[in-house]
Length: 143
Image (tube, rainbow, N blue to C red; front, side):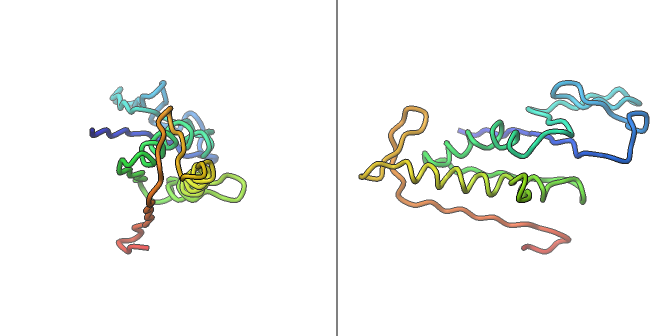
């Protein structure tokens, strides 16, 4: 089974006004107000969305698939200063996708019974091994 979902988060822009935008958000579409081009996505989060919203709507179900043995990749891509690091890492006040994902995985591990089994979407599963990796490519360097 292959499935790719493209989700967009509009970064908060405090210095610009509505009149300076050349685009507008319409549901899960971004519309260029000058050319009238429409760009459609699986989910578009507005500039006032929180990291927890993105986690709940885009990541949590993928983690459930991951815990059933499916390989999962969460990928953030975009221009410099568009909020990728904040979305992935977050802050103390607004944890990002990475800390929320690790908390969720460890919560599921804590829910295992004495034999190491747990329940996800009415499936009884056993965790044998979990491998997680995280990397950042910034200015052509891998961190």
